[in-house]
Image (cartoon, rainbow, N blue to C red; front, side, top):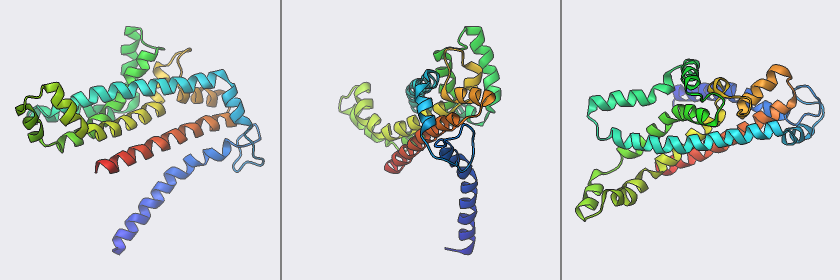
Length: 258
């Protein structure tokens, strides 16, 4: 390894540590005995885990987050896969334009999207509803599915579908037996990223959530504004665990695809 390469890797490792270590510092706070946050805790306990799982509002927020993330994942995978397959049939200019539209939510500021979606959802009566949250999170997660499935579609040999059609297979049978197995890793990877994106989203959820429909990030945000106790660290730790599991699964799928 050249000296320049070693310095580059060392700088990347320091940058990653600066980002990850403050996030991981939340975990020890979840096992504190005190009613205030102190790092490291003076006494260790699982007291606040019992408070979290004994509070119906926290459990309801966790279940709502899982429900919204699962529905957003399913909807974004279905829509994103159709979009990735459709982009393949467009000309170069139209494909570039359509791809830019699908990837727009990745580059646009989330607060701008939140304000626009809030105005639209309010006119449709979707503020404070699960459907409104699912549709908003699907918009954010859709680019990840289009990108992942698009990579799989780009590597698909079109002669396989032509050969299947020439042998008398119907379009649905060609998709089910030839196209779907080839793009399935991309669909799985995109679905995992979509789930994690939806589960961790807070800005859109703050705008679109209601008294009876709150995701876990919104519940954390409300708790921090009122009383910052270690139960917030418990909720954050659960989110970190689920995000790490999702990222590891996405990495595994990516490696298998490669």
